[in-house]
Image 1 (spheres, rainbow, N blue to C red):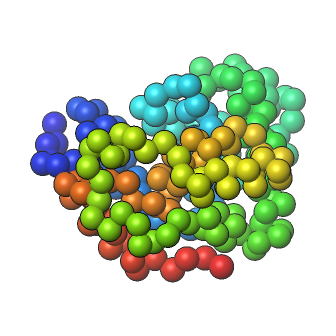
Image 2: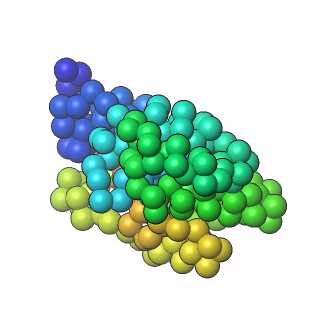
Length: 202
């Protein structure tokens, strides 16, 4: 197992977690399809472990047309039945229907803001915060933020589902809107460098 001194505790001994942590979590994203995937998977994770979702991610991608929300927005009842029969994903009717609904709402955001990325990055917290990285105790206490609550409220007003404040904070962590790696974690500096060079979409 790949052991790195100071790596964030939540990786445990799971290779799936370690790869996700080292190469994806916290690094800034501006690709609309990847952002929609992250939004959807965080919603599917509600009430489950993230490891479960990670291990099913390729199945989710296959089931939901690679998270191309233009295609997902056209899914109908036949697709819902197909997805409910797919043992490779989380077969939760409410979350499946929410994903299809949210795809249509994502198209509306693109019409208004030009991209899902331009919309989402408007909610980025103050970049001056957390300049030294968190301690483990501080990191364990992170569950949401005012900006995540604002994002959740705005999305729900626009008709999105499964986008509560805690889910939206997890989305912000995953897409690099915040850097919540431990200060002792080598990835903290890598993410900081990536965020420093990242051009925020407008």
